[in-house]
Image (cartoon, rainbow, N blue to C red; front, side, top):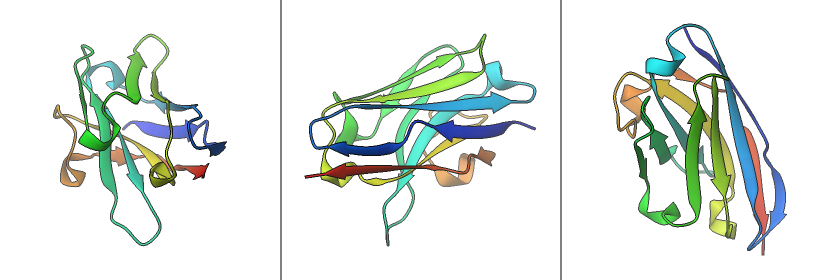
Length: 122
């Protein structure tokens, strides 16, 4: 079973950048699809970005051109580079893993991290 731990969240002004990291432990990491979801206060958890074991990617329309997901299978790490942040990006960001790519549905997620808060001020 894969365990996930996010880091890198914080407070940033609109237009700024943050890089989230997700450290994975356990077997089969390199064969799993990975993804980032986010949940704003009072809203449902939503898909942000996903990456396959081989590096194929997919993004939510709201973050295309601003966010980049990547992974390092040798280090069991997944990253989310977030540029040109907007107040609407404020949320708790969760790392997720599953067997299916694109990993964009909550029902396909096999394990979640604990989340990291991202706050974008206007």
